[in-house]
Image (cartoon, rainbow over all chains, first blue to last red; front, top):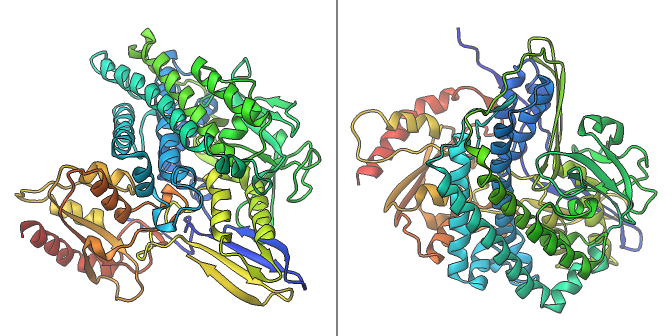
Length: 485
Length: 131
């Protein structure tokens, strides 16, 4: 007999941000709140299912970065079944993951961050999109972006069966080896990917760094928060997207802690506010002191700029050179949120260089891609650096591998306190005496666009509006004005 | 509901290709590039029509979104992008969408209204494809 399951009320990300601005008696901002009024249920409705389903279930969380969830879930299964992945299997995972990082970062630079810097922060809103970016960088570059993206997705599709919801990862390895016949194509892709990443750095230098107004904007106080930073590092403390330890540095740039991702609950805690469904992560050892920065506040950041801050360097030579250029210009640690766009380009180079290394590794075509698990499952943690920051998957099961607990901490959640601070700062800077500067939405958008928060995967409204609503309230809570796209 | 329709559209002889996709944004370019004619099937929630109502749109019925994220990039942005890049993209593009009861409730099957309207939805798509 067929069972029909209907889950109600809403359990899926609806996808809009909501900002509530409270004014004091003088009409100045008392406090601005960035709210996420959606509730997601993945941690709940996965309970009772086999843990092995998680790489497939959790890749549905986000249509933009399914590969990150797939990989974190797969690594959690390795840990759950206490199995060390076969060496070639691990390398195929890394190849796919670095390809994904390159593609996702490239799309962010040209499609998402592009409107702010390539088109320009003051450009009319109708040009603030990929079409405006193509207009600025030229048709040939636009074609290159689209072509590179497509070729990378072909690699992911080859290895993972499909690009949007890959079926690559299994506990102990991967489902498919790479055929030697296919390798030349991927070698060509990796080489072109590296050229493309280096070209992108040159675009960034030419369009952004040579423009004083843009650099002033990046380094402006409005987009600066002196927080802790976290990122995954290898044994030499260099950036690693796929595996390693988590390193946290202080706002002064000194190592605060370095830990095995399995111990994340000893280091990270979640603060809850009654006005948002998103939890606000903080460092347990420093404590939650509210939405404030500095060494006494446990607020920390993740994502490209944070990863570079948290590491001692990049793992590949050309990326290391680009890393040194960034910090020589902006200082280390770099507290400027908008510099995340630059850090993203540095990471593109590392991802491409790592792809080149992996496709030239003789083991990459080995057929020995999986170690069959033999242990009974108990508890497993899998962590990767998603494009938007550190992503945690933690599962507990009974001895049959049926999930009894699932805890997911996504990148945006790590950044949520800092994003809320950015919104509050922007509102305080732009609303005076009850008068709202029309640049508010743009400034707020620029602040959180740098983090690329993942609030809106599922929203596609017919008129095509960006679902951000700003409500302005007086000291008594009465709504004075609503601004919306 | 579009997936259910796609499966029915595959039945019997046909001179068109059926692609199922849960993707949006730039992925649409991958699916649509190289074709001269395309019919997109989707669910829609306007709240203005009864569940099961089939609505037809053309590319000009959608506006581009001044959005902060590529999470929001959709069909209108991709049409414009394909034009700018001079890609071979369907000149004859129609969008057929079925009004659904509630798009944010998870369920494993179609609602009775959508199930009832499905044959007409598929038939209309076939007519557009043979036009």
